[in-house]
Image 1: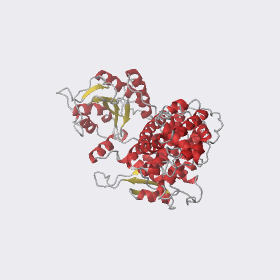
Image 2: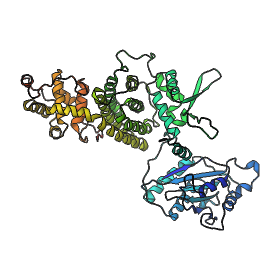
Image 3: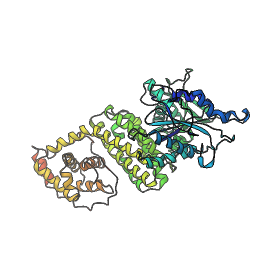
Image 4: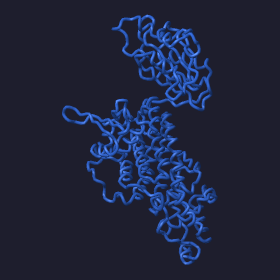
Amino acid sequence: MIPRIQKRGQRTIGLLYYLYGPGKFEEHTDPHLVASWDHNAPDPGRDPTATLKQLQQLLDQPVENIDQAHRPKKHVWHLSVRNGGEDRILTDEEWGDVARRMVAAAGIDDPEAGAGCRWAAVRHADDHIHIVATLVREDGYKPDLDNDAHRVQAQARALEAELGLRRLNKGDGTAAKRPTSAERHKAQRQGRERTAREELRETVRRAVTGARSEAEFFDRLAAGLLIRTREAPSGDLLGYKVALPDDRNKDGEPVFYPGVRLAPDLSLPRIRERWSADPTSSTDAPGRATAANPSAARRRTASAAWTAITVVEHSDDAVAAAHIAAAGEVLDALAKTSAAHTRRELRDAAFAFERASRSHIRAERGHDRALRQAARDLVHGGPALGRGEDGASTAMAIDMLFFLITATMHWHAKKGHAQQAAAARQAAEHLRAAYQEAAAQSLGVLYQRGRRLNRPMLQRQTVVLREALPTLAEQILAEPGWYALAATIVEAEAAGHDPAALLSDAVERRELDTADSVSDVLVWRMRRMADLPADGSGMPDIGTTGNASATHRAASRPSAPRRRQGGAEASGKTR
């Protein structure tokens, strides 16, 4: 149940015309009253003798009874209460009780405290009602509506439990402002997938991703948005607001949104906090990704994400919060630079995770430098192809980010941040879908390499697996991904690594029991740790049928000593 207090107004009759009218898209059906302040208000919807003017005059009567100087400038209070599509349809009587509970919670009318403000609840659809009230009581007193939004939200949570409706998560005031109904209708008219507010929030988030200065940030914004800045008399920049070039009001003027109205962490002071913790030099470090090497940026992203998991799980709250916020930048950058077949799911993952990137725990910037640099590398590394090393390294990065986002979900859940935990869970689902698209081709190549291994070599890798991971070996051997892992073990050994040690390190401190494919996860971890090409390109086909001499040389090496498996901590991996 979602209660939403709309902007206060001046004309009661105008709101009544809308509530009893056909709607902007003919969506209003059978408008009628379900409750009112005295249980006896005229209903222009079902009483042919009643008029909207009569209802308006009764609602406004206490306002008209006081002198002009003491009347509130905006005396019309408007609340909509909507259920979800999966909720059962409430009866008129149930909606009437909802309305009475809501106005009492807000402070509009409390029957136990005597006469309150006049109000009426109109239903014109199965799933919601509108409550209109006038903010002057019979005795001329104006109600105290401080925190009315919080009170009606709390009442909604209680009503959900009592009426058997879907239970929504309690917010903490750190969410971005929701688009208004007018903004949503405008987006529909214009054929936009998202409202202007949502598009701007996403665009500004991407512009700040990896940026190191105000100049770089505003240069990125100027590439696609209209910008206005606010300056102090000294010339210092105080704030900014942005608009989509084609989003205009009725007068043909651009509709601007200040950064803080897009999201709390997109105000200029909050954005500056990220830059204040960066190194003083704005130049990229030697060896960083270039526009010709997006796969290198993805490999560094995978490493940074893997390191950040331990930080989120074990560091203090302020440091963990900084890494979680920076993870949002990485998702934005990955979505911006990935191939078309993964871009949609990655964009949706970043859009969902935006809610999980903020809480009342203030991030301690500076410790998140590796993740923020990874985001910068992705942006400057340029667009990646969906195949070859680009595609495989994208799958590797998504796999590591999945674990980081899952760790974030558990962190928020432990803190009681219900909305943030739900957002992280939703982002993880989009990442899982993106991974399936990104990994299919590269894992297929590794699978075929593994299938070509001759029997002695495959048996040797089976022995290595059983020695290194005795509790997981049989599960892995039964998975289709075993052949890709076997090929990876062979490549790691040929590159001079101890495969048993790599396998043990790959599962150390990371629980795998809930993974759909443990072998897939181990493939990416081993290839990252051994610095193997993500797609297996350029590696010799050691141990394949017809390469008996190589097989004999590899098989003659002594087996690696068995290592004790590290302790496991639940990561919630479900992919």
